[in-house]
Length: 581
Image 1 (spheres, rainbow, N blue to C red):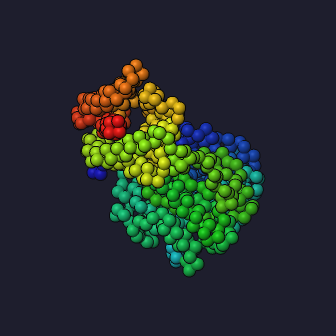
Image 2: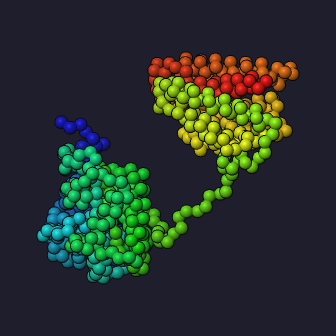
Image 3: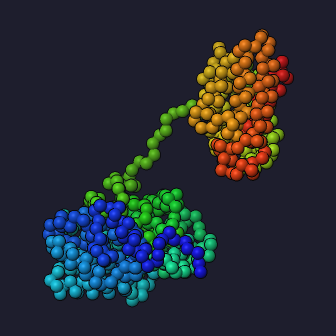
């Protein structure tokens, strides 16, 4: 028996429980007791208007019940998963709207045999009871070049029809006028889907097999296989292939689309694509259409008509004029309808200029050298060499408690400093140098390490000016940097981080204020020794911050690589100063 992969209570009750969850979370919806029929809770507001009913098999959520509300559907009828709803339930929905005062009822039906038969039977039964009923069949699938007798399938373009018909009904248009308008608009709607995985009805095996790395073009929303299988390509290429196929004039199912046409684009998640992937596909679709001269008036991107957990996407296009766009923009209270802007997508300027900031690259040339410049240059060279020499050692330490790249990130910073030193002067003001270094490591080092070092250097820089760079000022600067790291990073001494090397070192450095003249080097030596002992002590500490905090303590028995790196930096500074003294 296959392991359960769906978060359900039972396969038999999942549809009823899902409908209950929906209506309890949306105050504008109600259930007809004992039936899988969801209706507007404010049907008294129909006031002689046309009522709209749609529906179909479950598993396509938020379709169709999510589109119930003023300005869209009045009721939706759910069948079992991927199964057409029974005629009795459809009839109950129609009669409920009729009894609430609807002047007529429009059934919006996707083109599947079961839906056509069951909705058609309910329509005939309702007419026999004196109800004015009409039915619109949505057949927007662009997959098959030569559709068979069953015709094109009804897909996500159905949601466009819900919106336009709902807007017309809300404005009080009669049933025949609504049917005429949406029938006309349907000629300009097309949809095509692609999937990277099949889906499975609860309690059943997947509807088809798709090997890893393959994708299926033109599949249906019930898991029916598509028209073409190929290897997964990049998003831009997949989207281009889809739009090529949808608009291929040699296909009987193609959507006529010319340069200069305006469209509404719907990028529909079939169930399991990440938001990141959806945004990439949306960008690709916009770029592809605009490159063909098509004006994208509106875009909707999200989950609108899904296929359970299928990892795929469908693209729906609807040609629009000003009147259709007005209806599309009309307000609705349907819970699943997105909050869209009424600004044309293609004509909107979507980037703005960032503020002008001085970059690390500009900083060095904006300042002149001073007496301390050679000293600081030598120290930076020594630090860079030390970090590059210990790259593999730091990586090895990090593999025991992180992702094994601590040495690499410090080496990136070291190489960036070396490159910077080759083409820039070292400013005479230590604070200006630290500001430059802060920007350099932020951009070149990357990750949390780059942020931590940049934070330390930025906070320290404010305590060192050209006229305030004595040993006590350096100690205060380092102390300020550590305080900023603890304030924003949340770590403290004892948490098994670089602070376990830095904090003992700064405690020693602060003693320089009381040291006798010429005693500065002895203080620095003590600070370096304290940093090295602090780094070694992390071997016995339990990590409470950083990635290592997620690993069992008994598995972390080596010193913290960040603390070891800090001790190495301080040792390099000491050796550089000793060489120059």
